[in-house]
Amino acid sequence: MKPRAILTTLCALGALTLSAGGALAKLPPLDEAAKAKAAEAAAKAAWAAKADAFQLCRAQDRLVGYVQRTTGKVGAPVPTPACSDPGPFVYEPPKPAVAASAPAAEAKKP
Image 1 (spheres, rainbow, N blue to C red):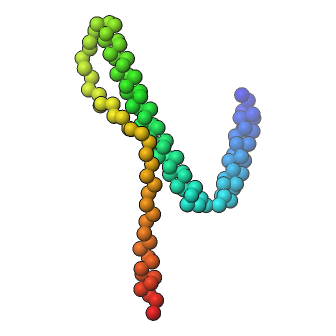
Image 2: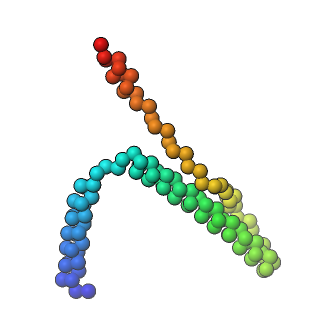
Image 3: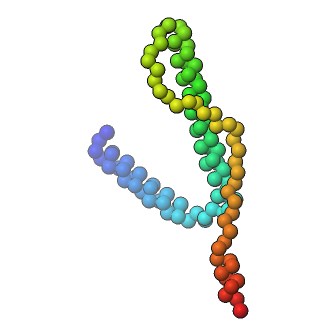
């Protein structure tokens, strides 16, 4: 690429970045339902990562067993953590925190 084309591309990307920042600043804050839904999605993503790691671990164990059976060679054992099954996905929403300032506000009333 020519230096002038690179400079033009960088300027265009900079302008897009600045305009996108202004658009995001005008979004309203998330309500409680949206926050709860986002927390559940994050929990489900974390569980999915654990489930994927478990399936990979089991597949690797099967592969090692297959190689040992077919080649007849058993190398030195390598210490590895055991595969841990994450179980089914269960989401328990966090309980809302009790406002500590409410009793203090009532105590100030005459």
